Image (tube, rainbow, N blue to C red; front, side, top):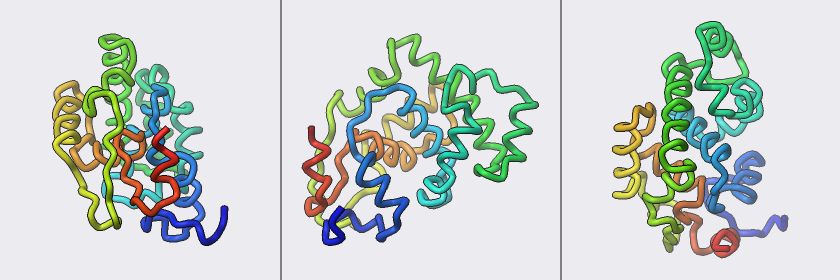
Length: 191
């Protein structure tokens, strides 16, 4: 990539951020396993920087069986203790327990709707909300759509799904295009 390429300011020229920004962030996502991965990682990110999560992402994939919801839903105390002792991930007891709870709720949604994708995209009427932000400071931390998503996920038993976390998830999964209008990815993600 050309060093003169204009990207969203939040990348801060950090290689982890750039890789994620250029290849994943904001690209409409409809794969249940990847959606579940983002949901889990966004929950772990609460109170931390996304860069911390990106640096540990491969460790998370290994520790959490490549984000296989069926396997995670069956985690027992032994597996949870193993995760609590894994220095390669965020060792937060509440977030680890929430991952198991969220896996169970995720599977229930798949059963009810046929896929998590069908369920989660209803909050944006099954299309990407295209914003026209000029700079990163204009982007909200939450919206009425993320409020509705948060409320419904909580009603279904999910943990660590506040509106701000839900909005970060929406950005990652391409449910909203929050690339700034000058960013080279702004038009690319609108496929």
